[in-house]
Length: 328
Image 1 (spheres, helix red, strand yellow):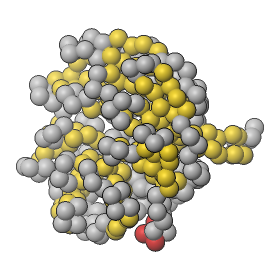
Image 2: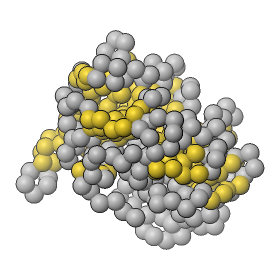
Image 3: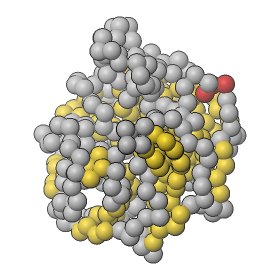
Image 4: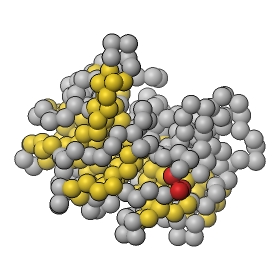
């Protein structure tokens, strides 16, 4: 994996904006990359894997760094805790800490003290540690679903940093999913899953394909299933609808609508508070006008496994497999 970093400065007019390269980072993770924006810095976390010629992993090390766009500089963060398995990591910003969660890795980093702390163990994490969909609610980190190697989970847990403890999420009506799609709306975690299990067999009809979870009451409600497969991309909340791939879902009306046609399938999206940017596709969607516009093309090949954040002014894209083909 080749480490490349660029920033897109997005102006208010469609099609405008300029790309510029970022300085070289002090780390070069080649697996499990994730990031958050703190309001001042982009914190990146990943795993550096050293492999033999036959591809076998000889050593795994967690690494982290911070990029400050105001000073255009990086700083290496203290060494994080133990590495996990071959699975990925998820991260969330609480307003005070970056929470990093994955199998074998549960860490919190405070930029003010420049220190890591280990999240507590819990019997709730004994079966599977690390989830497919992770969201920050403003109070808790909620993880739901996930799985690997033939398993697809339909349970979840939540972590409260203030209390420093985990709790079980109520049993859902959903079918299991290794790669659930969803978003936090400010009130509920909306979750969508596919119609088949990891072996390709249809899930029983009694299991829901979409549901919304209210952490205040610890209850689920069934909602309308997606009109088509949403793929393995991500979803965002725009203040009124959940935007997921080629569709938008309104929790208030329990209805879906199809977005104007655009080539965005399986492309990662970043929400800027006004537009949804698919930087690899060179497209931006404005839900207010229901229109797509083109953005300045990135000065680097399309890639996979990169990470990106929106700073309020710029889109920062970092790392990834350069020249990797996108799956249409």
